[in-house]
Length: 230
Length: 230
Image 1 (cartoon, helix red, strand yellow):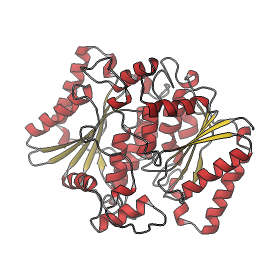
Image 2: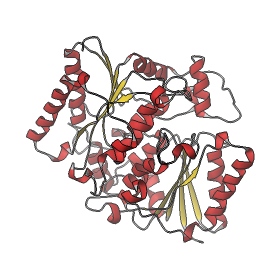
Image 3: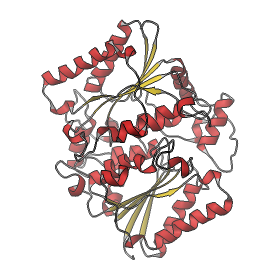
């Protein structure tokens, strides 16, 4: 789909990692389709994950008691957020599709990526009550969580020790993306690439490239409790 | 319970915040009981949330391709983790009870606290297959997630827009604490302190102090999918 804009938010320390390969394949395949692809390589950028007073340029609205949510909302409205946050917001604003590429850390995304969510998706920019969920401010965008696990697919089956993998997708897909109005494509999960054969790893990379070829034809999931918990 | 050791991992930027009050009350009440209380005040410590090569002192096991999980596991075994991580591991090792005190950010903990999980609970220290879940290396410890929300209790009821609050506890309580063998006490949730009356806020602080008085008599929850999803 020529002309579409994609932002890949990528969190792995090592370019030669399996996550690095998945990211590279996405850049190549989507570029080949004529999409314009931007990558936020969070570790390479040394992206700041901590939500602090430094995110607000100039005076605070209330310097007696620092309230991060209120201060960043006010700062957003007057154009007073720190530059690194503004840069990421511009990339999000322009994107039709956000791909989050990361290794699963503790049933969630790595802290550096959680910090991207905490700092970039501020009130006023991504949501502003009652503009949340289906009327969130980032509606008309798509998102996909693409990640690797340590555990095998069997360990993330319903009834197994880790529970259904969908359980852990709720906070990320529903609590963040859906909350901002973003429609969520089915996640792309590569189970335990560290523990499978080289051949199997190649198959996984190939499957990702194949999926990307028809990505724009996919329908978003129905992001409601039923999808996650049946 | 005199002599018991408690570690409070605290993530709020502002000492005068409601989270700050909850933390202070816990320190006071538990100290009064004769417990020894340690606080890791993550923002005050400027705790590093990013999982990087800096966490490993000296040479890498494989300098060709950096694998955070493998390198920190090896570093743990030879005593080669960075000092800030070792300090936190010592506090965890000594503690009978871990209390995580934070404002809910995006259906989860703030990035600075997620970074504490990512960096401190390394393989070899907190888990080492097959020593996970009930045989995790931190068994015989208790943990509690104590947090504030922006949304009201009604917004986090089953069937309402945010879904049951228990849905979002799964990755934190089960995926992190239970995985390491830690038994989980019922969470302590203060809903929307920013949007209630001063009197109601005082009631909430009082309820926390009251709960702490009999905390050591509480039974852990049954940390299985039934508790979360019924």
